[in-house]
Image (cartoon, rainbow, N blue to C red):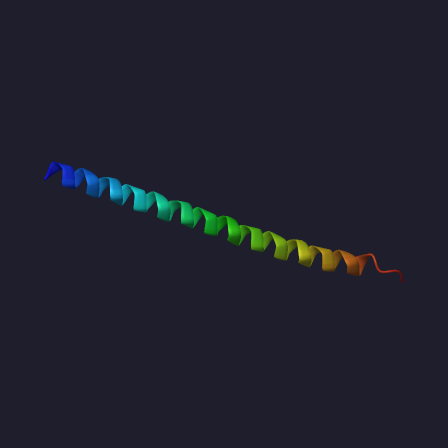
Length: 53
């Protein structure tokens, strides 16, 4: 019985760690997409200011 509980706890901890890593990776991807979008927006805005008259 104790062995079963230990194995369940190990399995639960492994699944929690996996979910935690997945969530962190998704947060990094989300920030990366946001940063690229902001850089593209900034580039477009800056090109408007740098147009010759």
